[in-house]
Length: 536
Image (cartoon, rainbow, N blue to C red; front, top):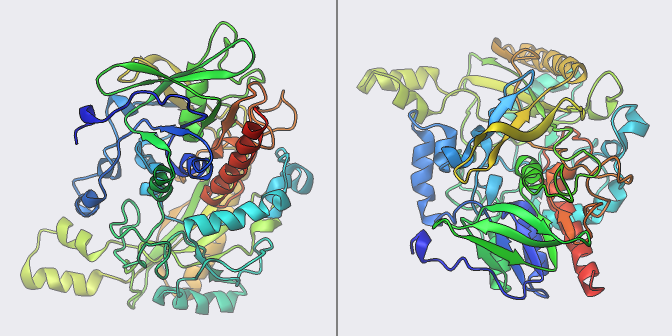
């Protein structure tokens, strides 16, 4: 069926309109669909699962960049970047049903208790209006919904109420090499919770070890949000793809009345509903609110605080890599199986929380080596035999504090394919994060030196880049003057509008955000359901 053959007209008598079919929007739709008339609008297409092998082939070709795998680019995805560091937004985003989970790595850690109280416990940043205990039951539910493989072997993790749904992946061969060095240095290693199946789960097969998790899992063993998009449809939700929302309309009673969306033929439609959930991520969510400016809200919708788009955060990367004089068996899987959170809660005003990662995919894969060389036959076999699998590397993520000079806004001149101003990402990092990268590098270097590795590269403060975790641009606050949404993710200004996204994070911590996104989305969905039962 072509894009033009799909019915993209509005749904009559819709109770809930969800904007965005990534993990947050999909979970909200699935949660509410059994009891309410739900419609989901997404800017991108419905990707055919049968195409995943072809996308995997595209991913391993040197001629294709990562955005090419999921058809990112062009005027639809145009953006601008400014600030002290350029931000390559399109390198790691997907527009389409499933969103960023189509190409994510799949790591799902919980934030630590002090992450919710950074101002009080660490002396920097705001406190969240909720604490870990408020989110703990939703973390457990999110782990069941996504399907998480993990173990209770991390002494630095926050408290758990039950085991992970699946057993953890076994440590890799290179993990065993790291373990010997870490033992000598008094550094603890532990397993990593993964949103991929270590065994068959929820109708999906176990991980087949293709090693191409980023940017595509052809087996479907790694969770992506199409799982909940499809289940929401089975429960009665209507999902409309290629329907980018242009703006949200509102009445004089502080309520959103309609989402105005475009279709591939250029037609605009109005989707009315009783409740609206904006789940477009940390960049497109503030952009939509700013595009929805009106006479009543000249600075953008839900922006009486002036904080829509402000306090953009990402995680900073720190890494060290090199080679050993022995095989390390890299690239057998596309994700890491061991980590170290030992230094995470030492954070204070000067040093940020950070976590360390022990890579299983250091150095080129055999396919990459074969496709990038100009030798053949015995010469190629010799190069693969002598040069493959001796690499070793560590990574790490570092918290960035919310800063007023780091933000997302509308570009003053450039427009997208619909004539709307594109998002401009103005990214500034801060000295605390840069100092912490140096600290992480010190530990990483000491481990590789203990291993006897020849260090060949270091990603330090000058070379660091983002992890593509967009956070903070519609942050949660108790005080309406300090943020965009309340503790239930409902906007302070609009009684029938919620935001389900990492954009509501007041601080970022240093843990991958998707599990927290999922937990907050489930919590927000419960609030939507409760208020609908009370007719808002």
